[in-house]
Every structure is written in structure tokens, then in C-alpha cells.
Length: 259
Image 1 (cartoon, helix red, strand yellow):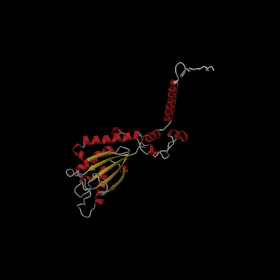
Image 2 (cartoon, one colour):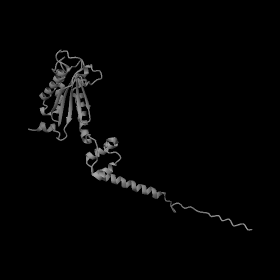
Image 3 (tube, helix red, strand yellow):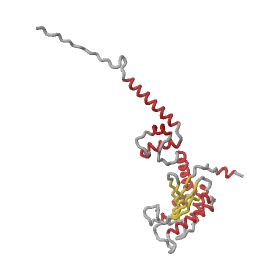
């Protein structure tokens, strides 16, 4: 009986022809990426500054959107709007507030150098707070009284000159420490309110229009600036500057050169 012949087959594998095919996949990925990029640029160019700010807020805090799981670009494509709870200011408005806060700090360093320990300026999201602090060696009011000291009048006058021509409104707040008032029948509520009123009248005397005063209120010792409620530095006047961006800034140079 003869043995059947053994047949050996040799298969030569060729990948992607002569030059290979992996580059084609990479090139296709590149084209898809470029198409996505230019589509994104086109969509961004059609958006308003407010919509762009909403997108920027989305990447900072993704959970601000009311509806989860929906692509922001798909939502814009379907509705033409982006639903967001973002209520922050536009970048140019934030920059305006930042510049004004820096300007006020510079005024303190140059024109109120001897009283700079009495003034603290803080920029918040939509406002600037000017804290005029009562120190033991440099009081802003006579003891237990709403009468301003000459130092307090100087501080208020300098800030009034800066604020009177800006498109802002001003809240004037009075604060005390937690110690009982030394004047017996007059409590901290009455004293803080009276001091806020005195500060408001001084601002008006220095040229701030009455219509710019948004409110005048006393808070007694309910909002201490320092942790210890009895800290005398909690006795202060707060000027809260609210910006009105619907009106244009009034140029001081125009006012000075006007006949």
C-alpha cells in the first residue's frame, strides 16, 4: 500500500499592499478631527458673547446645566440657545470692576497713606466693598456717637470724588461690634443706622448725587468683619459699589473742560 503524498502550502501575507495601510487610518482620523474643529469654530463664530460666556462656564462647572446628558453643541444646533444657570458677568464687565478696584486700592496707597490701615477694599463678583474701619488709635466716629471724625470725612471725600461720576449706585452700611453702646438708651441698631446716615450725608456733601445712593442701612453687630464679635475693628462703615453697565462712563476730562 502506497503512502499518500504530503502537500505543504505556503501562504505569503501582504499587509496593505506595497506601502502598507496604517497611514490611511491615521489620515482618516486626521480629516475627521479637522472637520470637527472647523465645525466647532463655525458654531462659536455664530454665538453671542453671552452664549460664549455660558460655554466657558460649562467647562468650569459642568453641572450648571439644567439638563444633563445633552451635548451643548447639539442643544445649540436644535434650539439656537444654550440653557444655563450661569449668571456671572461677561469678561469685559468683570475686567471693568477689576480695574476700578485696583484704581481704588491705588488711591488708598497714594492719597490715604496715613489712613490705609482704616480702609479695606474687596472685589466681589458684581460689586466692590469699601470697608472704612474704626481703629482704637484712629477712630472714624466719636465714642458712642454718629459724628464723623476729620479722618473719616477725609476718607469719604476722596472716595466721593472717584465715585460721583461713575455709573454706579452705592449702598451705605453701618456696623458695630458686639459690645453694648456706651450711651445707655441708644443701642447698636440705632447707632449703626445713625452712622450709616452720617456717612451718606457726607458723601452727598462731597458731590455724590442723591440718586446714586441705593440704600442706607444699619446692621448692628450681625455681620462682623473679624471672628471675634467684640473686636473693635468690626465697628465700620461699608460702601458697597454696584455697577450699572447700561450707562457709559462719564469722562472726568470732559467734565473738567466743559464750559
